[in-house]
Every structure is written in structure tokens, then in C-alpha cells.
Length: 113
Image (cartoon, rainbow, N blue to C red; front, side):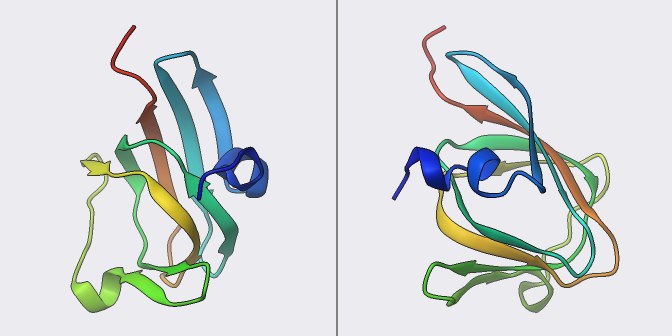
């Protein structure tokens, strides 16, 4: 469920910085240091994300159930790679790797602009 209180910038401001926003897009910088867990939050819109640095992570839903384990699934994005993500319901993200997870995401709010 998407709500203003669960939005990544509001619910997890230590890990998400708003770089730009208008009626069409929102640009977020996400930085999760090794060993950190991002509090429960959402991403209301799909996004294209540029990878500055990757680290294995575990995403859990609001019930604590693992929905993605990058190490277990063999997922590894390279620096300079761009990836696509759908909108994400309530989740936490735990950086279980040894490097920072650092992305810039362009969330697509509207195709009308």
C-alpha cells in the first residue's frame, strides 16, 4: 500500500535523498552502507536506476518474508549498468554484502509531460 508516510524519502531519509522532482519524474539517490538495513518503505513508481556500486542485499516484505535475495539468486549488477524496477510495495532492504549499494533512480510518475 502506498501512502505518503511509507514513501522512501519520508520513511527512510537516511538512505534516500530527493535530487529532483516534477510532475513527470522523481530522481532519488539511494545509498545503503554494508551491514545497514533500510526501514520499511515503498517506491510508488517504476524506475530506471543507474548503479554506482552494487552489494548483495535481501529485500523483505512487511511481514518479514524474503522477496529477493540477490546472492541466492545470483544477481549482480555492475558499476555503470542501468536497471529497470517496477513499483515496490512495503519492504525493507538489508545490505548483506561488503560494499555500499549506491544508485540513482529516475522514477516515472507520469508519461504526460
